[in-house]
Amino acid sequence: MLTEIIVIILTIAAGFYWWLLNRNKYWVKRNVITRPPLLFYGNLKDRVLFKTPFHIFYRQFYEDFKGHKYVGVYEGRIPSLMIRDPDLIKNILSKDFDHFVDRSTSRFKKNPQIEFMLIFITGNQWKKLRAAVTPTFTSGKMKGLFSTVEDNAIKMIEHLKAQTEKNSDQILESVDTKDLFGKVALDIIASTAFGVQCNSFSVDGKTEFARKIGEFNNLSIPTRMFLLSLLFLDLPGWITKHITLSFFNKKTVDFLAQVYKDTAKYRTDNNMRRNDFLQLLLDAQKGALEEEGAVERIHKEGALINEDVAIAQSVLFFIAGYETSSSLLSMASYCLAQEKEVQDKLRNEITNVMGDDQNLTYEKINEMQYLDMVLSETLRLYPPVARLDRVCSKPYKIDHIDLPVGHRVFIPCAGIHMDPDYYPEPEKFIPERFSAEEKAKRHPYVYMPFGLGPRNCIGMRFAQMSTKIVMAHLVKNFIIEVDSETPLPFKYDERSMLLKPKGGVLKVKLRSASY
Image 1: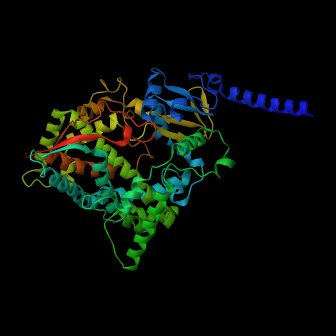
Image 2 (image 1 turned 135 degrees about the vertical axis):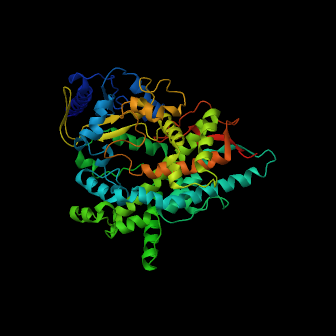
Image 3 (image 1 turned 120 degrees about the vertical axis):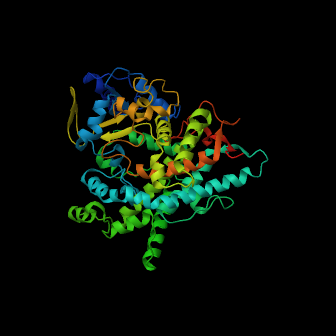
């Protein structure tokens, strides 16, 4: 009896081992160049164990296969295709988008505040919701939010001026940019998304709102490793649909959902309106969007936004907007601190465009072409995410490779942004790369900090406007310099999938421009 049990166990173990080995031949059988995988880890051991930062990992993977249009990758047990060729990227993100509508995390169960986020929903449901939400980000809506954003930027400047005036040399040493811009981003997003005034620069310590938002990405290392493992296990759909997966802190998500409900109820009960994102969502719930025939389209497609969907978008807008804006401002100040000539040129443009009254307007911000170049170059060097993911929603063929429904592809934007074939001397900070003349020389699908195609970042226009406003006021009033505590060169946090400096701190020096 014991012998039979041992034989059965060994047979099962041998079968499982054969299955693992056979799975590791997936790309070899399809004559696709790849890197020999390790059992369980595939090609991602250094990433799963947090030995290599997310951005550096995918940049190195991209560079290791120079000259190839695509590369077979084993993400744990799952075979994926890394796309390197700009024309193929264009096909996947735009031309043949109907074959790649979904993202890989869409297969897992989520709570309602996350399930209905635009970044997670799939197929026709995504198309309808995108059509319903898009009118909230038109130029007219952005212009209406301009003054609210600028008010918060001015509060930041007033705070910094008050601090510099305490010093005889008008210098602020070791300014933590992640903290500084995290506060202004929090104030901007809170006021435009929920109508909440955080006043981060006028209170001692952190408010409850600030504390909750600061915790949105707080997950233990074991939890992160478990979640990554789930993404890389080739689990069938009947299992994944019962597994809750989220890289957002649940307490933060629940807190923001309750803020939305409380604020919405207060406005409804008191017949109150505000010019913010929450109001736009409330109007959308009532089918009250007016621009570009939105009402008729939404009614026709049956895509009216209910409370769960509205809450999901407001939570997404807050979390994504807060992180993206604060990181971009932090990295832009870090780059400008090292480039005095670039900073002087930018300051001259800001001063000249603002004119005699030195006031900022929506129109003036859009005239600042060099400011746009500076932020674009910052995003090239330090994109918010290292890769873009898509899942095949219809059978697709790339050369001799048949991609079945459910097959993953990804685009390593962290690598593409640093490719010397597209950006000579890629390590250097050169805003002129993004002049109209230089952009016309490049393939349009080798720059994608906000994604490209129909599923690009819907809040891109707002992020660009808000960061330009803050940066214009900062550079006009302060000279940004390298501090003794400024990390040179920049080092990524190995544990984060987002753009974060090692240790979570990035410091510069601020000197009053009028001193």
